[in-house]
Amino acid sequence: MKNFDKTYRECEAWCIPKLIQVTGSVPTARDYFQDAIVRTWMELEAGKVINGHVPAYVFTISKNLYIDECRKTKPDFKLIDNSKFEELPEAQRFYEQQINPMIMKENEEEKSREDEIKERLLKLALKRMGKKCRELLTRTIVHKERLKDLLDEFGYKSVDVAKSSKYRCRKKLNEHIAAIKKKRKF
Image 1: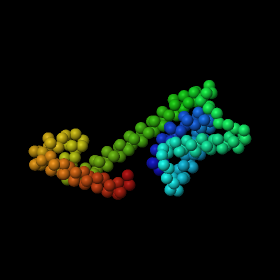
Image 2: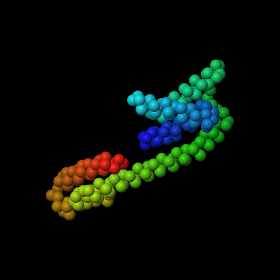
Image 3: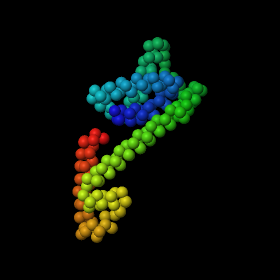
Image 4: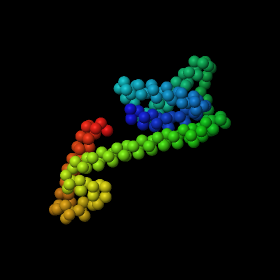
């Protein structure tokens, strides 16, 4: 479901301004966007592979649904460039000033939650590590110390030996992270 939320917000931010230009109104743009995102998600769940930019795909479906509906209700319908209408910049501005900031805030909050989860995972995994590995990874990754400067302190004979040790420690760390994720269903 997390992927759906992320995909939804990305598509919404990309599609709605363009759909406002096509449909001439925010509510109409949102309606056709909703129909298209549901249709797209069902296709993805059914195993369809979408090559290219998913938001562009959703926009195309939205626009085509709108055009199809217009043709049903108005047989002589022709799509025109709505961007020349006076009221459209207002609708676009409304979207950009009211709706888009909400989407951006949600994206930031989700990123913040993801960062917190990653940090918790890292701390839990580091606790499972041996003291030497934990110290080596903490000092090289978190504190950005160079391996070259840690040779004597850790008892390594060369930078290559230190690199190998760091590689093995990172591999163990990744295994611990995977085990924690599996056990706790992060």
